[in-house]
Figure 1 (cartoon, rainbow over the protein chains, first blue to last red):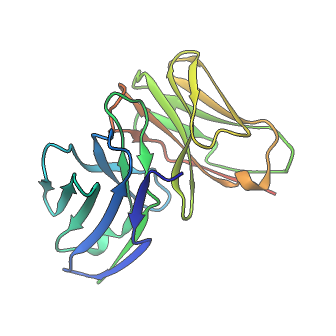
Figure 2 (tube, chains in turn blue, yellow):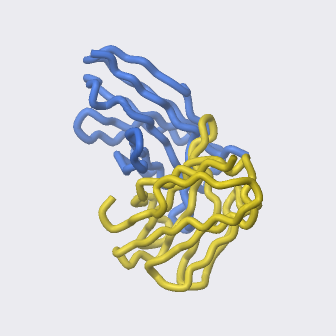
Length: 112
Length: 113
């Protein structure tokens, strides 16, 4: 079963707009939530991550918002650029565990 | 990606033949993982290793086996390839358990005809 649900499957945004990707999880033992970015022909690369003791984390134009009670977290990309066009994966893990569970992925297209 | 290489990058094979994919790392990381990527399914864990000769199953392990005889190498074997195993396979490494900061290889695109 899919323990991390991601939406939308695809997203088209105009340059300068805000891209928002949402994820929901089931396992309350998850305590580390990274986001990965993948360009065509490449492996995923870690973009930003959050732990549930904070509700928001920002790195440049990328922000994770975290809602522990709702078991949801989201990635916001401000001032989206064509170079942000990629597939984005949310993920979750227990720091006492040994493996990541990934969402289904979101293909983001930023039009110039 | 630096520190982790996958081979081959592309392979076409026939149904019923055995196939072995290789992941090689130079980071001396303890944990190594094999994922498959399929549209609509994201990345799904096949097998992982937490040390030499120490491996465990992931969520989609049926039809796959792995071996790790050296820290730097993690092999994924499809004993008898089927069309449902057509996919892009990614290897990842991690220095310790619970670290979500995986480093991924560039992937192997496998087509089973």
